Image (cartoon, rainbow, N blue to C red; front, side, top):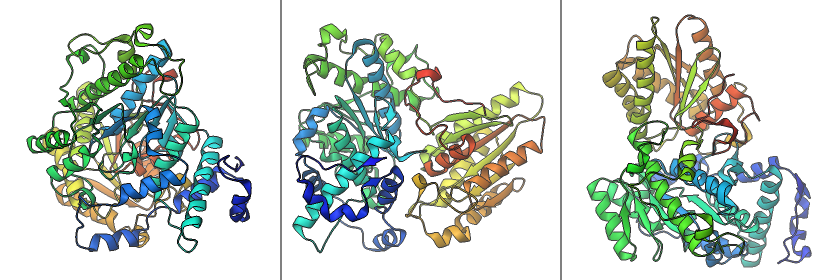
Length: 553
């Protein structure tokens, strides 16, 4: 994709130690290097066997700050990005997408802000989706060039410190460093950052002076890193609060809210709870559920705060060309009043793939969501259950429903996940899928991964033996003897099985729910749509003209 350049702060001769790797490096090379930074399954398992560490003591942030210096920056340099920093357990990615979309609509109408950066995780189809500028994943050329600039700088710094020990940031930390480097080099005016895990020690917390911070709904997840209680998790999430930056959160469990308030007080931050905003009454939020209105309400407030900051400052984050608030027409938000067209358009045009996404095919409708916690699976069950029940009322032929499920993470309670999904569908909606397909997260039936989907965190022996998949099938049959279960070794086989089952039962409206992990959803989309067709989705509506991507194949 291009020749690896020398950065002007280093002499070209200093790159001599790396020339043996070759000068003309491709995006595939970058992905191969990146995948080498994934933490291997055996290492993860060894960590899990050790006694729980003190969750409030961690050197991760200090390591990140060292790497920030290694690639040529000071922490304060990132203040120029006017960061919008969002943590939470559920909905933080969607909230970031809403904020990004509102900012994009503002830019289209007022030229405020200039360039907009968005950093999220995980990705669905391409690693480059995690780092976006003006809603588009960075190009292969830019990704590759900047990837190896960061790689080279880290190697040079490590060589100077200790030639015998070269310790690189792990996968997500590296991508965080890469995103910061890209946004700085490309002169981004506002950068919307989704926290990876937690907040206090997350790699994104090198952000020292955000424009505004937000915390979405909290729940139990990543317990080995964050703790097993909602209070411990709240402590970590509140780590993104910074003195001088306004902080907002949605309604939380009482004990979690108390911790957030205590942390805000410690950091001398004004924390405001955001209700479901009355101004959303006339806005079509998809799906039309309270959890999504909650995300949208928080996003509206966060976007408003950063736009107000940019306008009041004359938009001088990265330059002096942006208009003032008076010129842009932006006024501080009143959530009791109707939203401006900028905010309405931003919310209704948001496209955030893999979250309550519908894809229509010639044989049926796929409902896709990467839910991977018990709470999120309840929400997805309600979405699918309601969809199937509505179909029952509108057609004389009963619908055919199929489940495709995958979750491989050994730290999760797999029984709880599958039973939560099944019980909710049956007990609340009386929806019993006729077929349940359990697959691995391997992309192709050749037992190969798409390079963007390589997963070193999974036990390859368990994958080969389909242990988890057979256990899922056994649990499902225990609670529903009428359902036919299928165990397959790849996502490609799961998609083919679902298609074949539906085409063998013509005359019935068919619905397939794919859920359990974002790796599954990304692979399903890859198989359904063909690689490359949807490799660069926009998080805003653009030409789609609708709130969720819906494509007929």
